[in-house]
Length: 234
Image (tube, rainbow, N blue to C red; front, side, top):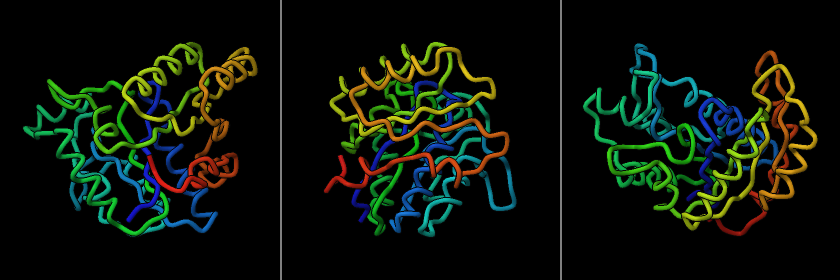
């Protein structure tokens, strides 16, 4: 069964969670570790001959070492590119924490050294009218990896996200700074210095903006030892 499992969240939507997750998977593979990953709920899926497919879930599949059917990587695939709870309601799909936890536990039984579970949007995204996505890692007692985009406002968003994670009783296993935009933010060095001193969690890497996606290049900028050196997952 997966020895170390982490939940990947972001400070907001469109911050690079899937790219960071893929880079972590690639880095782990470079260290000869077996990996699996999943994106339990994905909206914005496209119709294909094989059914609904999500590009983020496919990216994870491209970079995990173990072979897993698409339906295990993305068990809840929703076509509209809108908030998951709204997309699920429009598709008459029931999405609950317990159901997603069951999917996750099923994949966690697969032999692997590292497993990632990628969330959707930020920490407090709704799953339904009563439950939030953040309740899934709480149910599974997972350590959390936070993706922080280097753009104006990221300090506030990062501090609030980390505060909420810890308030939920979970550990911030590490954070990754990601440059999602071509234009570098002003005062980036000062921003990174503040984040390093105030997030109180390992910085796993600072990823550059690339005009063409290159997961191997991004993986080379990561240090995932804080994730893989522990004896058990949280």
